[in-house]
Length: 176
Ligand code: FNR
Image (cartoon, rainbow, N blue to C red):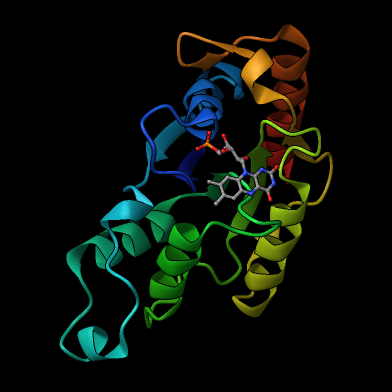
């Protein structure tokens, strides 16, 4: 069965996006295994001078785990109509790895927001980056969880309609 790596774009403890990510194993097709990647907070600010001295271990570790996975799921908030800087920075690091772990990788994007649009604008900026990295990004159905604060309890996504919708998306991703 498939292994999916999961990357969360928020670093705060009470993150709603982390709650969505944490719920995915309950909603995925039976037998799917999950690898939760290091926090984007663990990556230094991208600096070619650091790279010249060798990639930081967190970059090498993350790249190897993405390369090994059958798919990558990125669950992210939207900051100022775009991708949070921390996630962008981590992607920038991984993109410099000579192994190119995102090239041809099957990628699923999800987002959650306290607003009504559910992070839709961040998703489209993330897609744009992934074009340059030659990732194979899943298209539809899209999951943009709006008003997420009303759909969670005890650190998990609990709203039945949203859970069903995401389960359907994960099934389609597994077929993709
Ligand atoms: C936000 N937030 C936000 N929400 C949104 O729907 N569109 C936006 O453009 C922004 N912009 C934005 C910028 C910054 C700097 C912050 C800190 C927040 C609100 C954001 O969606 C909300 O704080 C989420 O709860 C963040 O996700 P996590 O941390 O709960 O996963």
